[in-house]
Amino acid sequence: MTDYDAIVCGGGTAGPVVASRLVEAGRSVLLIEAGPDYGAFAEGRWPADMLDARTIPVSHDWGYTSGDELPARSLAYERARVIGGCSAHNGCTVSWGHRDDYDGWAARGLEGWSADDLFPLFDETSTRMRVRRFANDEVAPFHRGFVEAGVAMGLAEADDLDTLDGGMGVCVEPSNSPDGVRWNAAFAYLDPVRDRAHLTVRGDTTVDRVIVEGGRAVGVRAIGPLGEVEIHAGLVVVCAGVYGSPAILMRSGIGPADELRALDIDAIVDLPVGRNLHDHPSFELTFAPSEELARRTAEFEAAGHVVPDEQGFAKGESGRAQAAGEPFDLHVFPEISMDGHLGVFVAMLTPRARGALTLRDADPASAPRLDHAFLSDPDHHDLEALVDGVELARAFAATEPFASLLDRELEPGPDAPARHDLRDAVRAGVIHYWHPVGTCAMGSVTDADGHVQGVDGLVVADASVMPVTPRATTNIPTVVVAERIARALTYPG
Image (cartoon, rainbow, N blue to C red):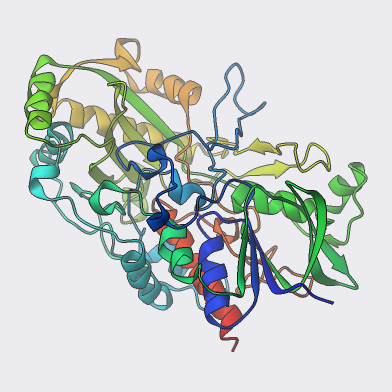
């Protein structure tokens, strides 16, 4: 007996997309989210920090951190535990990546994932997520100075972040923040179907594992306010994110068999779940603000404007990308935190290093071990490209009118004047870009439609299925992934 036609495990960026499409197709759906569900946007129950698109909140964080991979320091790997997931917790930056990213997925034999296949979904998704442009008078002095410096350096001013054909350039970024509100995936996809009788949303409920009988997923075991329950369905779709989805699969007996047996988990299917973990390795230069910046910012705010964390944005090219004829492989952007901290953030977009997620034990309350293996590729491609990015950021900081807004570089600072010093600084200070992917990759864990190999009725539909990270901020691409897999479920063949 089934309780629902489908159970969607995880209400983050991808889960609302999948749930809404299944509901629209007439299926009875249970959407389970580990964090709270604050209801529809129009109900007015959302915390203010989750709606304010100016800065990134941390009030609903899962609390994931680095381990042995980063000796002598702990790095937070922020993930949002709330309906809407990281789309309710992010910087609202919109970039799609490049067509080569998705054509590369298709070249792996993943039918339906080429840039031409996905373009209509990117276009529709951007409309649903209410992507907008900042008006000219909304651009804060710090961000405007960065864009104008990029033009002075010879970069094209090109508003092409939400296309698949853009190259190097600098611009004011698009943002999914209508009227300054962070428009998350729950608002975009779940709100229009919340009144449907065959949709049920359960917040504050953690999925422990998928129940598999005779090689088929038949439901889930979950833990909620009333304790442990088993819920049955004809289809289980796991959308718990790059850290959560592999953990659920492995607790269910789907993953590296030797590792599972060592944790006293019965191994049902031996698959490389948790492998291929990677993110864009990044580094942030920090600066003291100049008196000129303080003056201009005060004038800007006195005119009734707000100063967002992020607005200016550049795509650059490392020496290795240039030699390989790649379109771009760096993101560089200025960043202001609410405490006045100034940074220029650099991300390297085509990493070769691959890490892994592993379980500590079979307890769903235990966070998995995360090892992104940053900068560990044997030919130092990632390190050298990221150092090129740091040098590009320094070039921005030395170019007017941006230079006048900065007093001095604090990190890595004067102790890292030369390239070999920068290598040491980058190794010691590498951080992530909030864009992990790959732990349930298509082609090794799932097929091209997200079906888990060896288990009928079980699908993964989130950023964990991306085999290789795109050159993008991954919010909109993750929604596209969910759309693509949801459509395969609702319109098979």
